[in-house]
Length: 200
Image 1 (tube, helix red, strand yellow):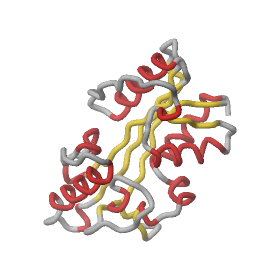
Image 2: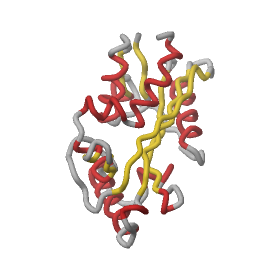
Image 3: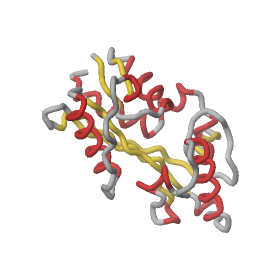
Image 4: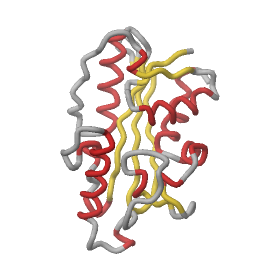
């Protein structure tokens, strides 16, 4: 079975692809398609709402069963921010690397006067699978708990991975191997929770 993942983010494709490959599902991204498709406006106020919006839009536009996710970081002392604005938190940068760096720097600056006990946070991933006829095949959510570090650590990952320290693993998300991360991450949990919609 082949499944379209509504992203051009190579890191997401690898993470989701590695998990679903174990279930005989091949994952392809938007870059694999001929032609281009208009990106839907992600204007929902929840991760689940944005995931559903993207899955339905791309499934209808491409004629393929589509999986979409919306994910981000929720920091308790910031009232859940950056939340659905995680990818554009700082609002600057033209490349993914520049945006990630600016977002991380802004987050650390906002937390510079907080103690470790006040730096609890989690990654959240909402996932939706939809068919071209508008049927929502399945929805799920996963979380990945940790605390925000004082400075970035690790190079395996993207976004806020270098800042989320997982206490029982004694390393950040970006210091984990792909297998370690897939076994416990928010995206890994969301993917495993949605496998049922494929009859697995």
